[in-house]
Amino acid sequence: MFFMNAQQSPAAPRSDATFYVLAVLCGTAAGWADVEINDLLFTALLALASCMLLGILRPHWPWRWVVVIGACIPLTELGFYLLRAIKPTRAQIYGSFLAFFPGIAGAYGGSFLRKLVNHLREGT
Image 1 (cartoon, rainbow, N blue to C red):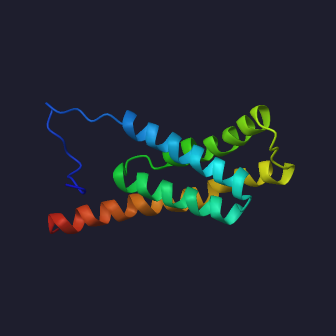
Image 2: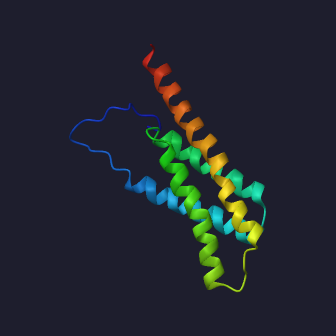
């Protein structure tokens, strides 16, 4: 089920490794879109949606999704700069750090939404 209780049985420990891989993939995709499409608002939307999804899936410590996704965007642009003939502009590189702000809103909004749904499902 999509929304599970925050408590897990001791027999099934929860690992966040899959979600960190998903965060890296989402951040890399947002960085790629920033270089190829060159639209900061679209990059911000991708960061917001990715952080919101991960905030819903793993609501504890939502700042970690902002850090992982937000760091992958400039790192992807650095990779494009080093490996390809398409060079991101200086404004693109500085603008990629602005994706942290919608990421913060998305991660904490998703975390709040998950906790709200869990609270409503408990009936308290």
